[in-house]
Image 1: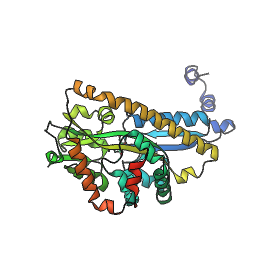
Image 2: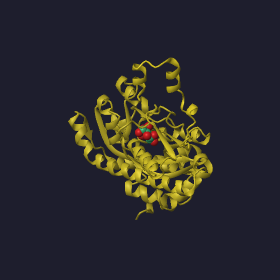
Image 3: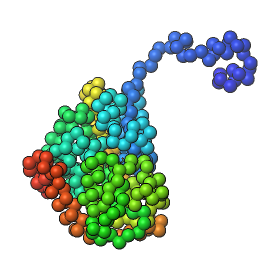
Image 4: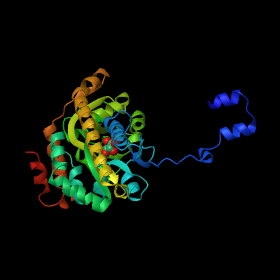
Length: 338
Ligand code: KDO
């Protein structure tokens, strides 16, 4: 009998009260409790690294039936961008996609992974982070930040996106341009290295900042520019290719240490499968999105990339950042995958 039938038949108040009684009163055996795993991200629904979390959830819940309830919070509705590592350390959050810039805050010697024109392409990214350098890096992250990295996902190659059309050939042409960057010193330095005037704004506030003109531009990979609809409030994309970016799918050691071996294996597999889903879709989209942006009336230009590369690399090598990089790491990164 459905609840509405009970009401329609006009049962007595006492009978209705029994019908609607909480389950506990009927003394049914309690189902085994699922472990809730909460994931927080600033990513917008539809962007591939957000969608990969759905793939991850499905794989985990299907492989370990009844054991986990994976809950995904997008658009920074659970925690603000950049605060996820601290929340994981405090035991408030189970998983997140952390960036090299988040890690550099705690491990400045690894700020090398925040520098522009370092990683060459998605294959090089895989070779670096799934090779020896990555192993050392992930171990240091686990020791110091108490999070375990399960997979690296290609976020895309970052490009400049300007509110108004501008002739940009070299870094000098970005002088005075208020370029939005995420709010940390490593990100802001990248903006400076590009020749712009970096200004910190959280990801989820970019659309409005572009619309109202509080910033002149921002940088993100093309699939993100599309899915976050930045093309509606900006006029130009300058294809600088300045950062082959990635995010690390990570789990708090507090949560990880509660898992048995089978659960650990499934979570690792799920992360790798999810990242592969992201990578395939993102790489395919990057190859075709220039046409999409043109069809939206945007101006797409190619600057003197060599001038950008030289300028950015020199800025990093001459900076305070490079002084703390582990000896020989730059050569090892360059040699990876060759
Ligand atoms: C951004 O804020 O520009 C950025 O692209 C930085 C990345 O590290 C990552 O946090 C990403 O935003 C979000 O996942 C939103 O796509």
